[in-house]
Structures are given as C-alpha cells and as structure tokens.
Length: 639
Ligand SMILES: [Zn+2]
Ligand SMILES: [Zn+2]
Image (cartoon, rainbow, N blue to C red; front, side, top):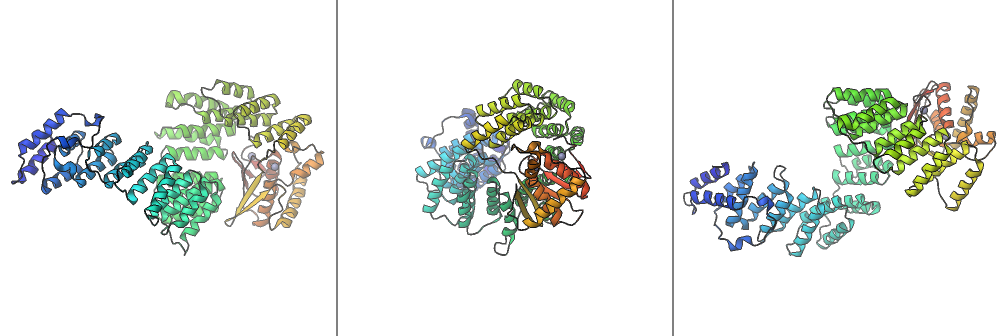
C-alpha cells in the first residue's frame, strides 16, 4: 500500500461516522490511478469533467487531512493520487483544496509543471481569481510569461473579476515578456479599478517602463507611488542605470536615506550602487558603499563581494579588489572571473593567467566569462602563445564553445601584436558571422600599425553590417593621417561633413570629494578654468625640460608640427590631470576616466608627468587602465 493510501486509510479510521469506507476510498484511489495513470500527459483539460461522474461527498475533517497531505506531499505518484481523488470527490468544488493543490503544482520546485497546473485550473468547475492568480504568478517567473498574460485575459473574459494580485502578477508577466502595450492596458484597468494606491503594483509598472526604455514614464510612476519602499527605490535606481544615468543613480543613495524619505538601502541597492561606481570610476563612493555593506551585515553575500571585486578593479584599485577576494568564504566561478578580469583590465596579464590556473587547482571550472577575462588579459599584455594554448583547450578540455567575444579577444591580441594578416584569417575562419565589434577591433589594430588597405577593408565590412559609427571614421582618419594621405583624409572629412556625422567628443572626468569634474577638449566651462590653463602651461614647460616632445601623429588636421602640438595640448585628459595636480595635495593619486581611447601624446604626457611631479596617475580609457608611476606606465607602452 502506498504511503498516501495508508495515510488516508488512517484518517478514515479515525472518522467513525464517515460515509465512505476505507476500502472503498483506497480502491477508488487505486482504480482512478490505474485508469488514468498519466495525468501529466493528459492533453485535454475539461471544465466540467466531473459533472458526468458521481461526486463523492466529503466532510471537513477529511478535507483537513487531505490538505495536510497536499502540504506534505513528496512524491509525484502521491500527487497524481491526490489529483485523482480531488476529481472523484466534491473537493473539486472546494476553493481552498484547489488553491493548495494548484500552489503545489505551480510553485513547488519538485512538482512544478505549468502545463499540468493549467490543466488542473481548467478542471475546476467554478474557478476563482485566487486560482488564476496562482498559475499567473507561476508564469510570471517562468520562461513563458506570455501564457500568464493569456490566462489573465481568460480570467477577465469569464467575468471572474481579478484583484490587485491578478494585476500585479500579470504586470510581472509583462515585465518578463517586455510587453509594454500589455502593461499599459493593465495600467488602464488598474486606474479603472481604483488600485492606484497599491505601491507594489506601481513599482512593477515602473519596472516595465524602465525595461522597455521609457525612462520618463517610469519616473512619473515613481512620483505617483505614495509609500515608496526600498524595492521601489531599487527599481528607480536600475532605471537610471539602464538609461545611462549612472551619476544620477548614485545620487539616489543619499536621497532615499534623507529625512524626507527615510528608506534604508538593502543588499540589492548596494549591488546597483557598486555597478554605478564601477562604470563611473567612482572609488570614494564605492568605498562608502563597501562600509555600508559591512555595517549592515551584507558582507557574507557572495554576489556583493563579486560586485566589490569588479568595482575596485574597474576603479584601478587591484589591491582592494584582492583583499575582498581573499576574505571571501566561498569563491565561485563568478568571483574568479571577476578577479581575472580585474587583473586583465589593469594590465597584469601574467597574474591573470596564474589565477586562471589556480582556480582549476582549487577545483573551480572556468566558464565563458572566465575565458573572456583570461584571453583579454593575454591580449592586453601580448601573451600570444599563452592565449593560443588557452583558446585551444577551451572546448577540448572544458567544453566551452568559443563565442564572438573570445574571437574578439584573439583578434585584438593578434592585431596589437602586429600579426594583422593572421587576425584577418582568424576572422575569416570563424564558425559564426563576425560582428561589428570584431571588425572594429581589427580597424583599431590597423590604426596602431598603419595598415591602410586592411583598415579600409574592415570599414567595408562595417558598412555591410550597417554598423559604421562615427568613431570608426575617426580611426580611418587617423590611419590616413599617420600615412600622411592628406587627399583621402580631406575626402573622408568632406564626406562626414556632408552626411553630418558627429563624432563623440573626448571627455575625461575626475571625481574629487564626491563631485564629478568633467572636461572636454579645449574646455573652458570649469569654474577654475584660468587656474587650470595656467597650471597646464606650467606643466608643459616642466615636462619639456624633462624631454617631453608632443607626439603629433594623433592629430588629424593638416597643420604644421608646432601648430599640431598646440592643438594637442588641450586634450580633455590633460585638462583633467592639470586639474588633479592643482586641486589635490602633492603625492595624491590622480584618477581620470576617459570615454574614448587615450591618444599617444596624452599617454606620453601622463607618463612623464608621473615622474616629474612624483604623482601616480591612473587613467581608465575605453578599454583598459594605465597606471603611471615614476615615469613608467603599467602597459609598458603596449596598448
Ligand atoms: Zn590626447
Ligand atoms: Zn599605458
């Protein structure tokens, strides 16, 4: 006898006045199970299946016994027996039994089967909103959220009302399906049903607008929320992050805690803040979040530690990243990948490869992300042979199929190492279609090594992919400029002017006491501009004494050498560094973040300045870090 039959039998035994004998009950269960052995595969749910069958009446006590059986069910066969039993008795009319059974098959991991729960829902003769809600909720966290939206429509069509929970769950389905129109329709219904004050519902709506890129609408919904809890703030913060407003997102950390709102950030808030700090190079702020994490006991969470490792590495503070890594109790593959990528971006290629070997010794298997990290480490340091070996063993030893990012790292590596023909051959041999990033990488390498023809070919591929960006024209212009091909340069410039192609202006930022100071080329908008320009002139004359000569190869205009030198002297990173020298005490590290690749001349400038002024200068450009100390750069001129 099965455990469930046994349990039901003993329940029956206790009910002397029960009108079904134990034998009949167990035999009913058995016969139902044998005649209908696979309800999981039954394709046709039926709303009124039970009307044609005799319904066995039930009492409250036996109902309670069945409820506890549902709650303690551990085997699939028991589940099927319970299902059969519910169908055969009056219990299919019992809202509570149906709800608990649905919860079990919709939301409990071992039994979770959404097709099955949907079938059961349709077997309930008079379903209520609560039953629909259970299944819609399950769909809202599944891979087929659109099914939840269909169920919601069915709920409304059948006139079963639906409540704030129905709206909330279907809204989550819309978020997961990124179905903005559906969300707007639900919103209209929310307004009609007078549910505006439900904060959770509005928070989900805000999330939907945010995910679908409707930033302003998301903010409007936030304004409408009366009781803004931490979840609402977190959604607002991620909305800012998704819409390239990381700096404003940072500001929300203090605003939410202010007297006016008194809302405490939680672990999710900290995670979002660390992401913002990493992208903004906002070290001071990141350190504040780190302290907050420690003070509030979140430091044990591995996702926060991984985010801290990434934040510190992306702010150029490898020592602190490593401290966090060392202090972690359970280092998973994400932690290893984070530290490997951190070493990579800061130019410690050999250490990254060593960490890659170490993680394997510790029994942690590398994943796609780890390989991207270690291959990019090799590419930043010119470790061609090591990268080739690692690339080789990826699929053979670890079953990781190289993706477009891995190929991108190799193209970058070969390109930087001057093996451009090999890089081109690698691209042509790829199993997948090369994306624009790969062609752009090759174009960048053509710029470094002055490969005019191959550069033009890369541009052709970018045109074919309809992916040519303003920055690519600049690279091509640089190639023409280095080759002193003024004719083609003028032609390209004319073409860009005709097509009104706007290039992204170079922009460098320095964060001082929490304030972001932003500089563009020839910028005169800073309140201390006079002092900054005076300082820059002084630095220039000091550096010239130390042997600095402007490298004019990056300047695109056809000017005389002296004029070119003048044009280069006000590049954004130079203004930012001059401001750093001016505004911080001697010896303080100057940290600059640049949105584009730094030019050769600015690189020389920072390198020599670090020796002459005895300052560590850390520049993060679009692809990596340069740590300038004592007249040297961590990249050893390889970038
Ligand atoms: Zn420059
Ligand atoms: Zn460098």
